[in-house]
Image 1: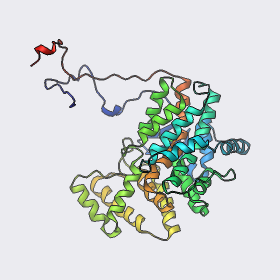
Image 2: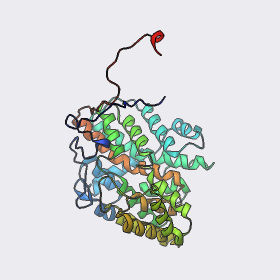
Image 3: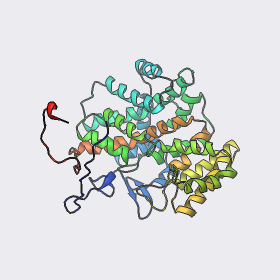
Length: 388
């Protein structure tokens, strides 16, 4: 049925200032991260993200997300030991993932797997800080196992169990490919997880906080976050970037492709940001490690294409790449299927979601915005026999 829009509606700005997409609206406080539009910077708990990416492991950043501080050696060892002990998922959960249609998107698979994980947890309504922290670590540990299982099943391959002797990044490669690549590849992947871990009140994080504000459970909030992240205007953009590059195919044709795309007013994924106006602070670091991947595989095609596309967009539109632009080709050069790029994003962002869910739970007020009604004026219901 078509949506009814009142043709006689006239906006009354003096009565209500509607902020479409909540743009510019500050609805709460947070100590998890800060996106500074003026300086194009991003900090997690006060630490610049590029410094964390270069000097810390993803495990250290996950600890930082959950506790507010970077761990010392002993704390990191204890945290990693617990995370490694929780990586296994039940046979029932494995069978649920395996039974899904082979053509379903991997984001649907991980969404279903997380939902099933919630069904298995008898503490579903226990939202005390200690229990929610335990659940957050469980999500961190088990989501990579779910994603890797789906990666294998969709190829008709057997499941590879997690290895408790490997880091999160190493273990994911092990579960997907049966081997751990060279250190440069592992570092590039680990950096991507750190850069994707958190980004203030983005669409999926806000969604997770809305669900948490109803006093629903952490699994439901995470499932909601996954649903929001699936969209191509949010997490799915890294997939669309790679599809675009494959469509272009020839790096020497990239510049003209972009010129034509802009002339035709095509939506070009991987550029621009609601907050950043002159560059995403995460891009230089991810671009560096995308270049590392090009060096590892001995093929500069995608990075040459990257340079040409970026050059035209910046010169013509003054619009800069966002994190998805270098992340897409980086993941592709690592050997991952394109539709698994966003589930990898989930693996990282579960840390930020959990931090925000715990923050919301600690000082909760249900999130319930208003809307400006633009439908028909109040009218009388007439019997069906009298309607023309």
